[in-house]
Image (tube, rainbow, N blue to C red; front, side, top):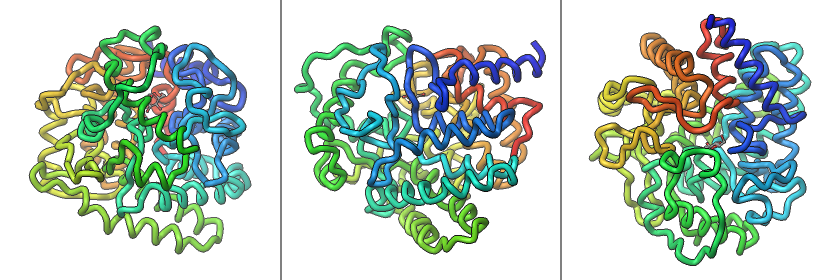
Length: 417
Ligand code: GLC
């Protein structure tokens, strides 16, 4: 198949997963609108249908809470094939949503979508801007109290099952969650998915949020899980900068956004793990570091964070695999090349890291990461993620964000804006 054939297939995947105004990640496994998947879908659409790109973001933000939070899932239409669904979350919103958020990449990608077709996008960007500001204010108020971005559920990180969350998860009691039936293992082989013990704990954290009516102050103060995430911190620093740039271009006063960004930059030392020689996830209840070298630290480039010691460690991690940036260090005891976030590489995370490389002038690294990602997709198809050692395609097929980053970044025909 030629690159043009892959481009056609990628566009077809976005069309197939379009449910009318919003795009699902893939049929079966993920039948609703997911937050950061949608932002990537919008970016993908912008390569061939700019109007549809803006619609995707507008639909996502139409589910924004009064608090400013943009939820991690919007349950537009009931689908019994997914668990935990809207009744389990009990978030009391219309449309029904989950009760947590997901990586704030929307401002980063909205800026790129606008740059692709500035004139057409101006009114849409102007209308979206106050909603983006309200969401970023929520991140500042409800998730950045300690100067770093902290997550209240592993699913909030988007890197759901990473070894980064092991210290926090070990302290969660999942024994009282009651009976439930998982649906994910009906779509994908159980060896690629989180364990039963992990799932019990995910549900225990969810049940805490539900029991307090999703009161964020209570969740932050007393919730069963509260960990600082380097990836989220780097993503939000970058997103704040992009949002400030958008605001400036619209003639807005962006000093508030700049101050949020400065706070996060100043807080970075809290997640510097000197023993590891890298920024690291940290349990904020105990102070314990996760000691994980993986995709989280690699996202430092996205925020323009350069550090020679960390770079040497990270390049060794990358050289330890054949394809892409692994979600965990192949030398770590918990490394598993096929289990969800415990080793595999995600094309979409590679695209974000490559954005960082490109902006840092790291052309050789950017080209290498793109080459490796292209090879994975050409050999395995538009899958959710891949084994970084032998390139085996894993998880869901016909995947929206893999198609989206193909069109905008990986494809040799991409405009790469
Ligand atoms: C998984 C991923 C998450 C993603 C979702 C839909 O839960 O961990 O990041 O948003 O699937 O693709």
